[in-house]
Length: 122
Image (tube, rainbow, N blue to C red; front, side, top):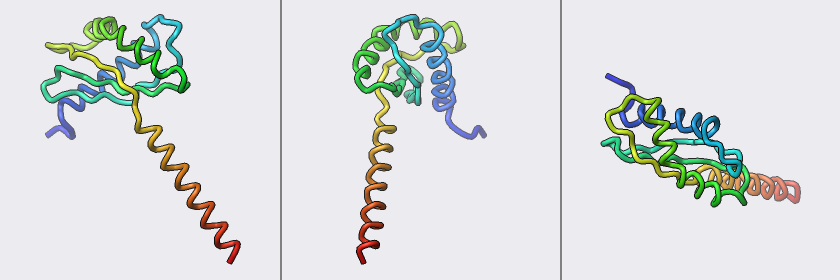
């Protein structure tokens, strides 16, 4: 038995290939530093949501628009690299998990600082 589902294995493969296509094949100078953090694919392998992280906050919306407008090109390149009966339709989204994790980390630091201040006062 395989360790995880086919859709997860295909998602991992698509994540690697899409990241390589964005870095090496997409020649749009407006795209900044983009990281493909994950791909969630439906069970029937027809739709893939590609989650990305963008380094500069002010470039998020423009980069997302550029990638969504270039998804036809990315899908065509993907079809050359991956042997599948159907290449899934791609949608790009911003990965909010990293920002959420950073927010939790900053809250924990604030709690630690507050508790050390309270101990010092006692």
